[in-house]
Length: 171
Ligand code: K1U
Ligand code: ZN
Image (cartoon, rainbow, N blue to C red; front, side, top):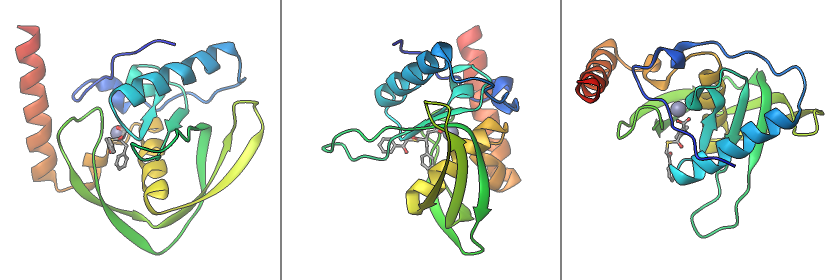
């Protein structure tokens, strides 16, 4: 396992559409281990491979509370197969846009098809924070960020702030 760097706004790699996984092999299992180590250390409740600079459709999630046992979920090539017309709002954050939170409206319930770590096809029903987080992570695999759902004014302001911070680090 290895702790990997989480790439941050305005890194253009966050806008890539990730490649599907053809075979769940040892390389993918190592990637999953690294995603969990990095996500737990952050800490976060989800992490997509592109957030550690790997453009593959792989997502790690764990919604367990601080004092609970870990409940790791892995989603390989996840696709939303159904979404409810009913929506819900949640104040989202993103490990690639640290310390910025904004309310986003998404489908309240989704069904997601994916491959598990054995390469078997699965389908899961998700509601509440589970559904919100899955949609946020699947967006990452498509190069979409939660700031794409907020006002242009707020989005431009946050991109400017992170671009300025990145330039400071370079200098
Ligand atoms: O994808 C990411 O950047 C991870 C992100 C997932 C997410 C959070 C909220 C709504 C939708 C998706 C995070 O994990 S941000 C950090 C966070 O939410 C958290 C951190 C520690 C404890 C509890 C939550
Ligand atoms: Zn995110």
